[in-house]
Image (cartoon, each protein chain N blue to C red):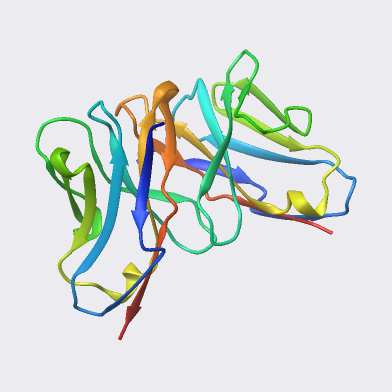
Length: 112
Length: 116
């Protein structure tokens, strides 16, 4: 079955440090992959997405992700964490019928 | 960007009552909308696909008689939780696909339901 797996339900980083959130997907077909962010008691906001073409995708708020087919990964990074990056992050996979399947989520805590 | 709204943002109701949640696409039309459920500190689980002018399609394990979905227009889908019970307490989120960017969905802000 197609799915996405996020490694680590919680990540703690210091302000200014690198943010790395891991996502692996399972599929035999090149997927459409997404990263969404959710702030407390809010809906989801799209950070970036991969469809085809360039494997390094740049998104909003300084985030970027690299699609690596050989590793079936789509990890999200940000060079320097900001306090406002504290949120829940979801990797998602676009399945048939335009349906999104989400990973378990990773909660990011930013320490001052 | 496109905006999806939900109403109400939160609701408290007594066990046994029904609750209706609205999802609107404010500046674009959506023939399809999706309803998700999110328990505390968990991921989003797709409940159903709302189709304008036709019946909704439900994911496996979701009771269609419990969660009634109506997609009456190209900008409005409603989710009614019938005879709500405490276990139905959750965060309900809707989304609508972008017509301009394949695969992109716009999410509503969510509705928190508490059933007493």
